[in-house]
Structures are given as structure tokens and as C-alpha cells.
Amino acid sequence: MKQIVGVADMKVSNNPAESIITYSLGSCIGVVIYDPVVKVGGLLHYMLPESSIDQDKAAARPYMFADSGIPRLFKTAYQLGAVKRRMKIYAAGGAEILDQKGFFNIGKRNYMALKKIFFKNNVMINRQDVGGNVNRTVRIEIATGDIYVKTSGSREVKI
Image 1 (tube, rainbow, N blue to C red):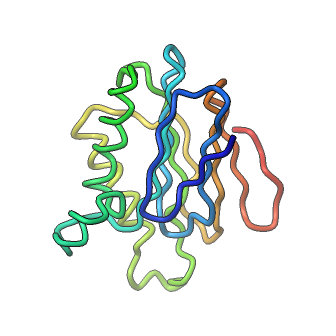
Image 2: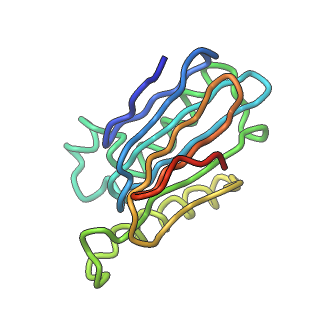
Image 3: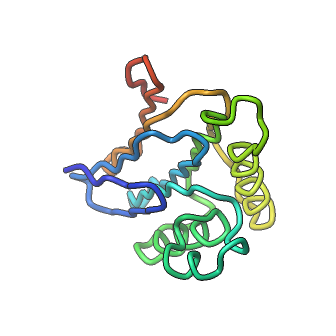
């Protein structure tokens, strides 16, 4: 069974029959977490680095922003028995798709927000596929923790 994570959305599961997938990560960042002991996995697809730009929108759609979405991703996984020190973490996205000249640098700013939050909370990224100018689709299998990535014009690969 496939759970789809839309833009500014998040899913966490401990159901081994499920996979969680998000499509078309451009400047957005997809954060995948997985605790192999309790087999809890989650995926967040956030659009912007900081919720301070629009407090009302952040309250209504917390997964839209790194600083409000990332803590909720981890807390939801903890409720299912995940433990921070056991988690494997993967990040993808942060590309410059519509902004080829780098005027707004949304992809880079999204990635820097992730790094800042992780640094402050003593969290390490195990693998990543960030930057460039390609869209990415990311999928995690809850039963195994296997993560698959597909970039525009190529086939899906296990990382």
C-alpha cells in the first residue's frame, strides 16, 4: 500500500505493508527518517525554510516550512516508538529548478534551514541527494527502510 506525501505534507508509518512516496521535489526538500529497530519511517515534503514569513500559514500548514515541519516529523515518529539516536536520515531536493540564475536561492535556503535545525538538535544526515537542477521522487519501504530515488529522465534507484 502506497501513502502519498503531497507538497507541504508529511506521513509517518509503522505498517510494514506500506511505502511512503513524494513526487517532484524541486526546490522543496524531502526528509526521510527511519528507525530500523521498531520499523518506523516518515517522510516530510517542505517548501520554505522559515515559518516566520507567514505565521497564519504556518499555523494552518506547518509542514510547509522546515522549522515547523521537521520537529513534527520527528515527534510523530517518537509517538510510534522511534528513537532519535537509532534513526537513519536521508534528505533530497533543494534544487534550483525555476530559478536557474539563483536569484532567490530557495533550494539552497531550504537545505541550509535543514542543516541548521539538525545541527542544533545533534542530528546527522546519513545520505543525501541535494542541489542541482533536477526534480526528484523519493520513496521509502517501511518493512525494510530501503529508500529509492528517481530523478527526471532516469529510472528509480535504491540508495
